[in-house]
Amino acid sequence: MIYLDYAATTPVDPAVAEQMAACLTLDGTFGNPASTTHEFGWQAAKLVETARQQIADLINADPREIIFTSGATEADNLAIKGIANFYKDRGDHIITMRTEHHAVLDTCAFLEKQGFTITYLNPQPDGRLNLAELTAAITDKTILISIMHVNNETGVTQDLAAIGQIAKQHNVFFHTDAAQSIGKLVIDTQTLSVDLISISAHKIYAPKGIGALYVRRKPKVRLQPLIHGGGHEQGSRSGTLPTHQIVGLGSALAIAQQNLIAEQTKLKKLRDYLMRELSTIPQTAFNGNQDHCVPNILSVRFAGIDAEALMASCPELAFSAGSACTSASIVPSHVLQAMGISNEAANSTVRLSMGRFTTMAELEMAVKTIRKQVARLRDLLP
Ligand SMILES: *Cc1c(COP(=O)(O)O)cnc(C)c1O
Image (tube, rainbow, N blue to C red; front, side):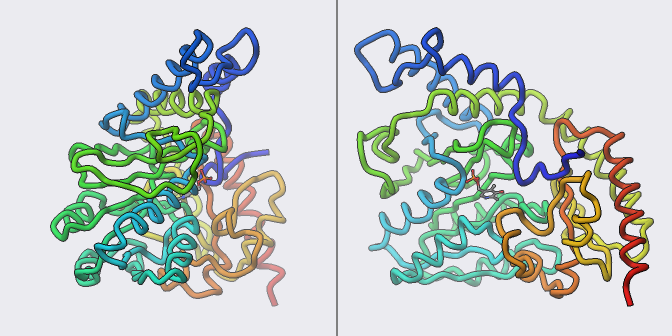
């Protein structure tokens, strides 16, 4: 089996798993980080703070700006609902894009039912935001702009620096879902005018079920919490901190930071190979801007081919049609639709995503299989 679905999730790095395992059993750091009266608690709290520092270091932030959550979904919910509810006296308007992850879109739809007004901007055909349209959409009631950094289906990147400038000029908060970019692209909170950043662990070789939200302190961004309880995380997110998960996230991001350039260089080579080879299959096209994208995600369509049929014909390859989160339904991807791609073209699209453990030999095998199966399926067409 060849795994080409790193954008859906990644395996935990063995070095990360080892550090996590040391936080579970009696001989390890199993204490409650909130226990302030004994060594077990102090040791766990120390590991949590080390991880918080590792995350802060990666994005050039202050550790006090990091709030642990259960993942990027919760971070998106906390950022968007948190701002909406805290600042609703200032305004009731939020701007986002139609190509966002459902964690953002469904949260906005929920707020819409509560009386907020949401503007959903369409991307340009290449998946990128038109900055003039963003500026034009801002009103004196706008409190938040939520635009993702890297799209999970196409790999297309948005210009965080430019969006942040526009948000700042208009005194509007700016949230970005960085689930697909954290540890892969440089994010510097000192130079970007971004107020809130959603982070997921399981796309970057750490476990599922943990993530974080960066919340700017200068100038201070306030949030209404979603989860009430023991007052953990400065009251922003109650619940006993899962030391092993947090250690996993912190150590994975430290590894990612150390290897960021080398890994991106390697992935770029793999992507160039994949694009070059797949281009030689007749009637093949790539979705999204190929100059502004991450090297690990490739959205490709083969005219006339049903993506589900192609996946079924390649049982030794693991990849996805559209995004994994919506693959249970047969509706064409909302991302590709918003880019103006026809339903037929969207249904012939597959997403190949690579990662740390992908080899050139695997890609050679994958290309061979896809080439053969696309030709076979086309032969079956009427
Ligand atoms: C995976 C993903 C999420 C959800 O993250 P979880 O940690 O699984 O909740 C949100 N946004 C994007 C862009 C993603 O790729």
